[in-house]
Amino acid sequence: MAMKAALTCLFVAGALFGPVRGAQAADRVSRAVATQVEALFDGAHADFLYPGNMPEQLLDTLELATSDEDRPHAVGPHLLFLSGCRRHSCDEKGAVVIDDRNRKLQAIGIRHFHCRYEDAPPHGQSAPAGPLRRTSTCDTEPTLALFFFGRTPRAAVDRDVAAAMEGWGRRVGYSSKVVHRCGTRSGKAVCT
Image 1 (cartoon, rainbow, N blue to C red):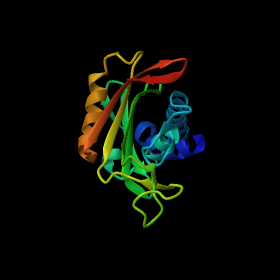
Image 2: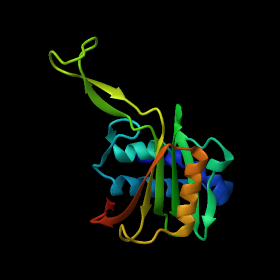
Image 3: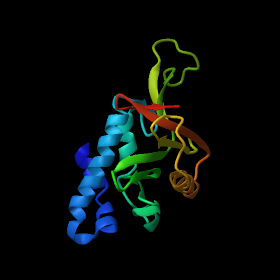
């Protein structure tokens, strides 16, 4: 997954550090984002894009930068915003804000359709006469999930970070929103 993240954030290079040091800088940023997401949400399950690994789903939505608005740009002192979408499914989008001094993740967001498994009776039956079959289903309207990081879940969210993520949410559109404030305990995200 780290290699995928390195490719994911390759577009960061030119915008942040220019063509000479670009590949090295992109590699540092992408490793930092991927490493933090994987560590913070290790073992977490989500039904954002499909039922399964939460860190993988969050990183999947940062694969492609499709517009100038997705390109990395400053959103406050030492804060870098970048966004993208999932390859072959650009309705599913992601965004992050990182502190460009220490590469610490400040926020991550995902626009998703809550794809999950449901148990249903066999085709053509209204009530189960036997074992249920597992089907996958997704909502038709997008949900925006935002995760803000601080020293504790109750820590104040930086105004520039919140404005960047809320602005991105308005730009990509959503029908419902879930906001999580997260701290860390033993290297894992603890979110409210």
